[in-house]
Length: 265
Image 1 (tube, rainbow, N blue to C red):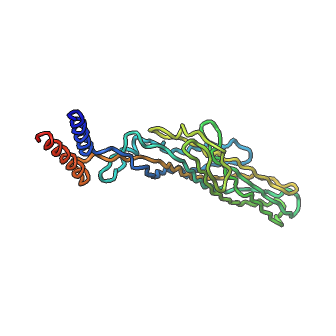
Image 2 (cartoon, one colour):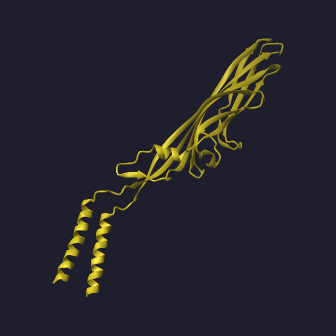
Image 3 (cartoon, rainbow, N blue to C red):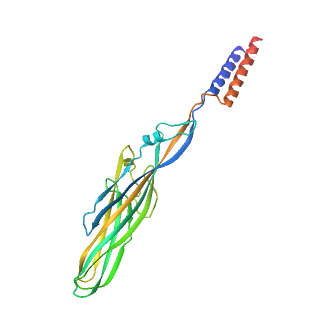
């Protein structure tokens, strides 16, 4: 009987101590977005000339920096090292102004046609396209250009689109363009910058008997890179016991008192 009382008293005090300790719990994940923009960049291309690689520079996803800037909810703290990249979004817009100069050398008044088209890639260091936007093909026909005369003009086309990837780099959705099926997320993680390149592929032609000239182009791109991330919050142990804790502790003391009374008798 005496041993039973001792066990019961020890259990009661354990319950009391448990009531005074505040448990640390994960409350779930919160999400937020950080965006970086590159561009606009402008380059010239056309008539088979080498296409330029125009750099677009973005900030990398820096988990430590983000964690340091977060404000936890009242009564909580941000878990150290809990910030993780969940998804990446590209939005891309581009425009190309195809310029031409045509001279009629046919010996008589005649007509000519100018056609141009462009494809612009957003590429990585290794050349793999993260995103490809094909602009509409432009064509214009001019009638009755006098012999020996020269005509100039422009044909403009624009395109926009987006590509969405999860935290492992798998493609989850896109609009307007033709992105790769997946990307490597590694270059986007760190504390520095990541460089992508806008690469233009422009083609142009002049149709008509004995017409000569050139077709060129000026391209411009703007890209936005958005990082979605998640983080966890942890409850901060309270220095002041809550009402429920008081009730639990009071019940434990009452049990200890009853045991003491029985022992005295």
